[in-house]
Length: 218
Ligand code: DC
Image (cartoon, rainbow, N blue to C red):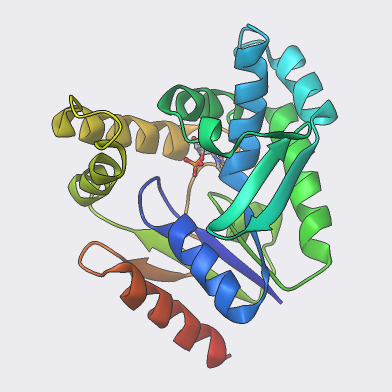
């Protein structure tokens, strides 16, 4: 069984996908972390992220591993625990750049298919239900108001950075939406057969419950 959860940044998909996978004892694959890994590796080497040939080479050779842990999962990039670095906003911005590149997407989509073919996986991203696994058993498309998604991001980050400005975060969320929805290759779009879940006024438990109920009624 392959469960696809797509949606914009901050819609709650990663948190819920992780919990759903735990409940079902499935593997959880965060495809955003794969694009982030490419951006992080490139930034570490001081490369120009607009250089598609160089990014394609990095994507091709990078070893990305998901390792289950106490509080979810770790992402190892070429053997290094990159989990915390990957959450960085600079890496997020870089990920949006490399995610718009055809050859990077081809490489990562092929890897995602390889992982998913073993079955029993919950995969979240932007194009899982449309491109990676268009025939997945269950597809969800999460949405939420940009203001609410900005507030969630703000709550998550403000402990480390008390000078954060909520309005700037909301602006950045809108900018990321624009980039994800308007790129030429695999833009963020709901698959026709995906179930839309508006998480604006729901907490994590409510969304997880809703998804699990839907899966169990297959
Ligand atoms: O979900 P996230 O913020 O970790 O994703 C990082 C970037 O990668 C974001 O700009 C969207 C992009 N992405 C994508 O294009 N396709 C995916 N399957 C997952 C993420």
